[in-house]
Length: 352
Image 1 (cartoon, one colour):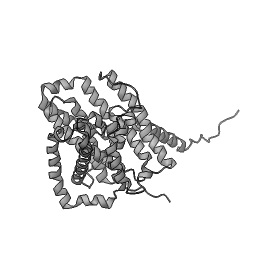
Image 2 (tube, helix red, strand yellow):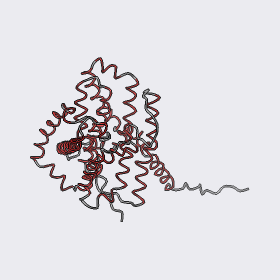
Image 3 (cartoon, helix red, strand yellow):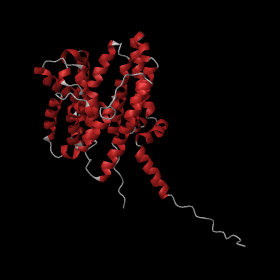
Image 4 (cartoon, rainbow, N blue to C red):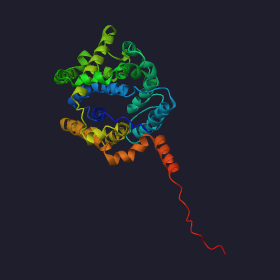
């Protein structure tokens, strides 16, 4: 008897769609750096949306084990897309957008591709990390010490720096996240996000924007060595509070088409960079420099629209096979093998 697969949690799909849309907005804001307001929006988003994304990735990785099926899925959904999209985006940025990106490929991930390789490495150590809750405080220590690492190879600084959010996702259970439905949590979520918004105005006063990326070594951050560890810990705490505050405000019920789009996050993530760099090549930063306020508003609205477009049914159907080419090919070959062979016409024919 075949057991039906468990139904998807619409809340998680809603969260994923919100977060990946913020990824697109954050990357698009790089086109409007001439606007003072863009720095505030950028810092506000980056204070908590990457921690939230990593937390959800950890939460959805609970079932990962070192078995053939899951390791194969890891290769199909993360390793192969990384090997393909890393050079594709690199050459697109260099040849089309005219950016001075440099080698090496794969060894040092370029721009958005870092998350694929880092998530792959997190998944590989998941069976160890989920064995005991003590790995959570240990991951915080690892994150704080990770700032001493100043080599971007395989984006190890982000692998170490964001590790606590991934480990927390591994260890929290649905009953824990149900507490986000409490009235007092939702009431507190609004002033919490407003407070983080205020903090974002003064990011360079109490921290540095580079700390929000978790990829910059302490040696390159203009903060005294005596307080840089404390500052990083503060950034982590703010990120966690912002992540939980935002998640508590996202509806748990299905939102129809929006929830369905939350299952297409890989399409959005892998392809949005090409569109953003196309606008860079078309000179969009020049327009936003001349019209900073209008440029910022239009860029944010367009980024949201881009996320929705990439997740729309028709675009998704066209692009999704490219996000998992090996899996798509395997399924097509399996369907072809399972098709019944066409019987020949059994009507006898004259033989003489």
